[in-house]
Amino acid sequence: MASQQGKLGTLALTGLVVGAIVGSGVFALPQNMAEGAGAGAILIAWAVTFVGMFALTRIFQWLTLSRPDITDGVYGYARQGFGEYLGFSAAWGYWMSVWIGSTGYLVVMFSALGSFGALSFFGDGTTLPAMAGGLVVLALMHGFVLMGVRSAAILNTVVTIAKVVPIGLFIVCVGLAFRVETFNLDFWGSPELGSIADQVKNTMLYTVWVFLGIECATVYANRARDMATVSRATLLGFLITIGLFVCVSVLSLGVVPQEELAAMKNPSMAAVMARAVGPWGGALVNVGLILSVGGAFLAWSLISSEMLYLAARGDKHTAPALFGRLNANGTPANALWLTNGLIGCLLVINHFNEAGYNILIQLASSMALIPYFLCAAFGLKLALGAPAGRGGMLAVTALGTAYGVWLIYAGGLSYLLLSMILYVPALGFFWQARRERGLPVFAGPHEQAFAALVVLGACSALYMLAQGTFSL
Image 1 (cartoon, rainbow, N blue to C red):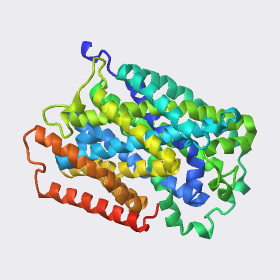
Image 2: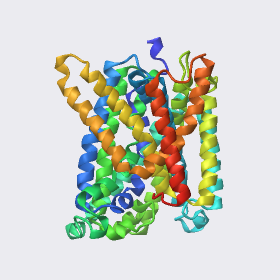
Image 3: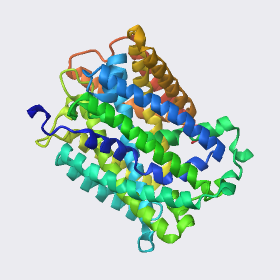
Image 4: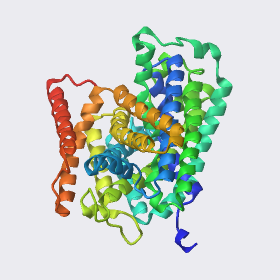
């Protein structure tokens, strides 16, 4: 029993999963989905997402139970399946995705605050006061996480329960205001939106964004009571969040027509609620968003620093050992300082460039695509070598891997190439780690080939940016 003292249980881990997933994404989901698709295509997109994300969820469940020796989550699975460089690349992509997404959280938080008359100076979340406010929130969260991972996880559980309440109220109110005739307007989308397949593809980065965090229980496997707890938390987190997301996006189309919904300012959920019940509803949703984003930002602060720490700890580290150290409270302080320092820099850049929320979340989503694909492919590799009785998991892992490929395709060439620019600095971190261990940079030709593809993709993206042909 002593060894279980201070370990995270099912409630705390499920809270981390739901807390990481339910952040800003759900509050912008009505506009995000309607921006590129009609009601019919959105329903198809959710069906595709349910099947694909359920497959990924089952893969993460199966991996936690069949390979309990791997307690490094996304990083551990990719490393075990495809070697140290690809493993570190998965950790890097996931880490980048989380802290870029966290910046988007702060932007939309202050955009919500800007909807209140007395705080209108926060504007759309990119104004100077919004940037300053974001830096203050970042500093406060940084200090809290430095106090210890377990205490932060407990607070996150409480906040997660509290923030689901306004979302549940939104679903009830919008459900009562739902009108079939509004929902059926341009059911298959206007000609400007393109074919049904194009419309479904247009939604994919947003569906990935709202589900980022589905695997975070595996990231904390080494802090959980047991691997069965990790498995339960992963499945529970998926079932809770898929229900919330489908209801929020689909029911909104029965209150506000697709074309009008697509033009709404984010957080669009507040505008839909105001249309359904009046201004008080919009204000309530904005308060819920602030609470939700604060909780999600806390959860992601934990997850992002943990991922860099996992890659840097131990004798076989693939990130510089500097980031594999814990402070007296068990927090990876050096990893946290780097992560939050980069969030602060991106907040400043975002203020001057006014990139906005949608660009940030699509970039964050694109960085997670390769890590997800590698985890699914590792599951498929294990299933292919498993006993004959594992036919069910072979089908699930094949489906999850196909979904990973589809996501990379649906995300589009622009974001894939742009993500390569962000993968290039990983080469320096990996080189330093290998140097600390007295090893050559790459273990074989396959790692050299992957690194060459990353550099080539980054150079292509930079060339397209310089020529002005890069389309986001």
